[in-house]
Length: 310
Image 1 (cartoon, one colour):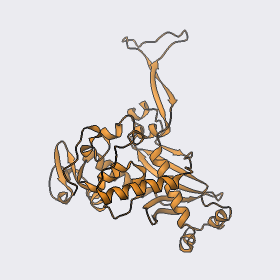
Image 2 (cartoon, rainbow, N blue to C red):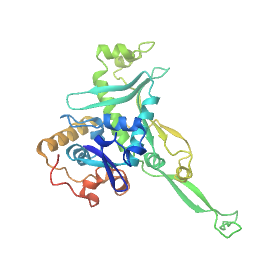
Image 3 (cartoon, rainbow, N blue to C red):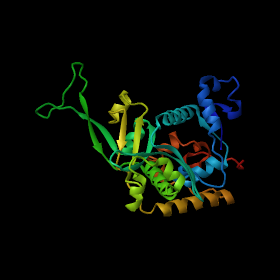
């Protein structure tokens, strides 16, 4: 469980954030409140986001005390706060609880033509947006009409960027939206829920009669460093993107069941799950080295587990 924040070797427990110290003095009060009020504790049932990461990471976050980096805390908190400010659709932050899983879907959006979408809003760095779409920006020599390299007056070679595409790395969002769609499809038929979100024309009823509730899934990606040189060097030229091509996972029920059971069993037995699969680690452990909040207590990149969980 998250118990504190660190920066440059200094560690501050969450309970000390209201006292004057090198970390709390750098944090706006709104961030401190958000961090303290959103520490997730194990209640016997996984959260949707636990299914979207490897079981080992979810287990370590629940079972062991850990400190997260100040920059990561600020990025996550402001992302969540900005996230909340843009949600004003037909249904926003829909609380979902099944027998085995809990979570909150971002938004159910009903379009003028009657189409109904499950939507998610993400505040991503340009690196993550490029990975999501599989964008690769490569610098190559700029040539003249004869195919010869060109140079500036100071002798430096001129270059230009060529954008290409590789396999997208959008597993997290794809899993998350598919799980939300699955859970919403189970609860949306409840009369009180249906009454709350019916739009003009009874579009929810129309879709139920057609044999399906949702027409698709969409992800809105807001680029946190959009417009900067770094973002443009990665091929990210816009401040925001809309991904309308989130694939439906036909075997989502199996994934939910398998990963839910794995985490519940690990928490019951205190058996540490196997190392995270590379598909969850981004670019040969890039996430492990830079973003994983429990990297210091994971052996995958040289960390070590404490002797005992809390």
